[in-house]
Image (cartoon, rainbow, N blue to C red; front, side, top):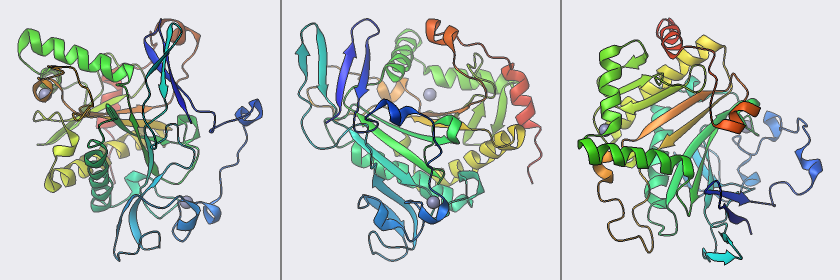
Length: 342
Ligand SMILES: [Zn+2]
Ligand SMILES: [Zn+2]
C-alpha cells in the first residue's frame, strides 16, 4: 500500500510508492521500453493490461480489439483505489494511506501516432474521455483533486512510447494547484474578476505572446514562462470546469489543441513535453470545511499547461524555486505563430 507523508517544512505531500521501484537497481537507466509488437497498449494486446475501466469502441465487447480510446488502471499505480484514507499523526508528522486513482488513457490503438497525428474527431474522443473520467472520479468523496497529464518522450518521463495520458486522483490538493487556486481566489476577493480572464484579455490586447487564438480558445506563452516555449491554453469565455464542456466545444478544443501541438513540434523538431490539465478541484469532498470555496465557479478558470522539456532543472532551480529561461516568451510565441502548417 502506498503511503502519503507530509513534509512539515515544505508543506508538501510525498507519495511513497514502493511497488513502483523496489531496489536501487531499478533506478539505473536501461531501455526496456517494449517494441510495438509487445506493447501492452497496442491493438490486439488488450489482455496485457488490467481490465478496462472505460472505452470508446464500435462493438460493445470490453477488453477486445476494435477500440478508439481505452482506459485501464495503471499496472504500477502511484496511489491505490481500494481502502480508506486513515489520516494519522506519526509523532510530529502527518501521514495517510496512499488512496487515489491512477489510470491510463490509451489514446489510440496505433503505437507510432502522437496525439497531433490523429484526426480531429479522434482527438475529440480522447478529450471526451477526459471529461467522462473526470465526471466519474469527481463523484468519489475521498478525492480532492484529479490531474490529467501526458508525458511525451523519454526525457519527459514517458516510460512507454505508445501515446497515452494519465489520470491521478489525490486525497489532498497538490501544492502547485493549491497555490494557483489561492492566488485566483485572492484576486477575485479583491477585484471580483477572474485572474485568468484578466490575463487572457491582456494577452489578446498585447498579442506578442499569442501562439494561436480562435473564437473559443487561446494559447499563449506566459509572461513569466519558466521554460522555453512553455504554453498555456484556456477557453476564452470563463469556465471553471473542463468537464462542463459540451461535445461541440470539445470538438473545437480538439482542433485548437492539435494546431498548437503541431506548431510546437514543427518549431522544435518533436521535443519531449509534458502537458497537464488544471481543472477545478472536486466538490464532493468528504468532511469539507463549511464555506470551503464558495466562489470557485467565478475565481477558477481551467487551463492546460504545455511544457516542452528543452532545459534541465538543476541545482539553482531546486535550491530556490527560480527558473532561468533562455528564450523570451515573445520570441517563442512568434516562432510558433510563424510556423506554416502543412
Ligand atoms: Zn503500442
Ligand atoms: Zn476566467
